[in-house]
Amino acid sequence: LVPIKAVGNKWSEHPFIIIDEIMNGKDYCIVGKAAANYWKLIDQIPFEFEVYNTKKHKVIEIFHARLNFRKRRKQNFPKGVTRDIQNHKFIIASKEESKRWM
Picture 1 (cartoon, rainbow, N blue to C red):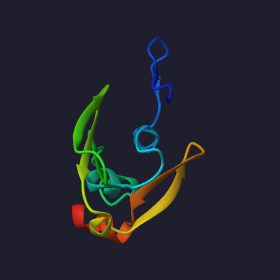
Picture 2 (cartoon, one colour):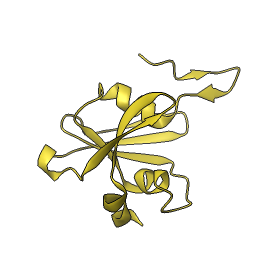
Picture 3 (cartoon, rainbow, N blue to C red):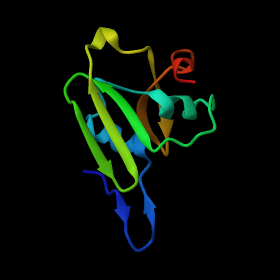
């Protein structure tokens, strides 16, 4: 488990880290406006993080972030790239693929 938030100090893990930990680091890809925002294609800060994966179809709300897990076949995932944030790896749709959500 990942420590999500120290309530009194008002800090939290980045949603991409939470997603990666929930998915055990495999078989997922962060897509949608969250990916477009990461690549700075849009300025809107997403409140929903859409995640394609092979196992879960579920919506989880953690604090003010909504994690929307959508079940897809692996071959229907967009091309993903592995990136780092706060020394933690995560998988996100490539910049070219993220242009679809602009």
